[in-house]
Image (cartoon, rainbow, N blue to C red; front, side):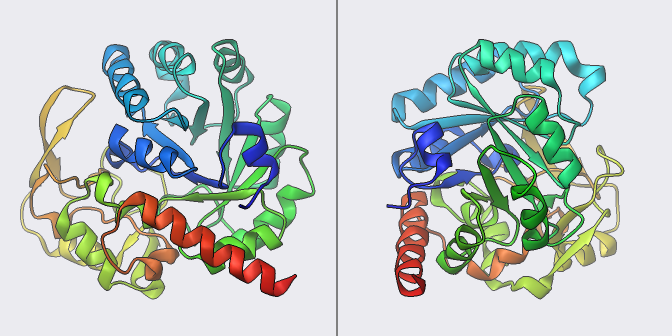
Length: 327
């Protein structure tokens, strides 16, 4: 298997970390990826501590593998107390606490460590990576501009990896534009300790993405994705990458509300507004094609709906074969 500093540190058997993925990062998907040897991930999504605890307990009933909790914290200062309540629950139940979309914060890292968890921080620049290492992070995720969903990186992944690997002494994972075993092999050969995958896992059976969303991914190629700020309702000034067709459908839609979704934060169904930042799950209703269909430039690697374990196996076997050939 592909042993790296990342796998040695966190206890995975394969160097694959699941991305945050919003509401698709659910207990079923996290458990399946962990059982396949990777690091599964549940997204905090602002849910109350008791709900988060129940989700993590559900994952633990499925797996003894490595799991993490993704904390998306664009409003860190305003929500610090509430974030810390969730962190207190997560750090005693998960192996890894993952942060994104805020400057690295040593106090959050210390809280996670105090609960017994390792910490990963997703960054988009060399300066941010150095700050994360200085804050005590155990793993750094270098996110290139090719990534789907919300994008911190402003340059291509390989250029970013080159900057970050030379600047820090902790394991570095590559994120953005990775959807095949060839991509995995390439970034490992470039010095990364593993990868962080989102788009491929959207098309995992366990993710529960809306069928319309999955069908659109299967039909798309890299050139069908767009780096934009169109879907900014509820989260302004946050660049993201999605399918061009979703932008076209939302622009053409007449009206303010395109559908409904269940919100773990509010504990009830909520309207989906046109150009709102959200993720379409199987229980989302309405005009799915006009919602943000997040997709990275790796989308060409999505060929069909698959079990998560099959995706992990496919990636690793292809990467191992190529690395042996290149050796």
